[in-house]
Length: 124
View 1 (cartoon, rainbow, N blue to C red):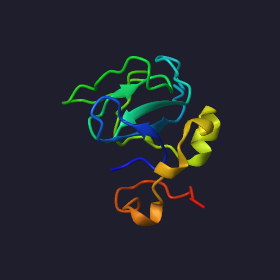
View 2 (spheres, rainbow, N blue to C red):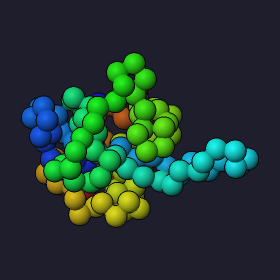
View 3 (cartoon, rainbow, N blue to C red):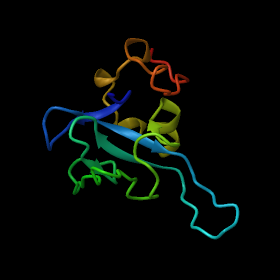
View 4 (cartoon, rainbow, N blue to C red):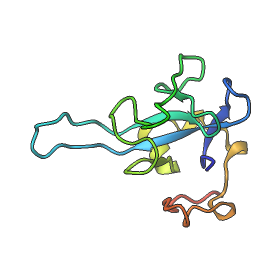
């Protein structure tokens, strides 16, 4: 599934879009595990290259193909609480200005509902 908002085409595979995957804050109520603040990753929707900083010129990594995990918080990369970032998520991360609007995909033209993605974000 393609990201709603992308920074650019992937410099690794040159075929995918590098979008922002958003991970909400994870708070451990028992304090037995570490809490993780909300954060984003840049992920290519084709080759799954990951950047932990919002800069495609920094080093990238690839997830474990059998158990893809968030390299910052350790949660699942696909599903769970993670999602392709909405405009609100991008604002919370302070990454809105990095997005190329001409690469945006309108939720109406994709299958967000079928795949459980949140449609709170509208494209004007």
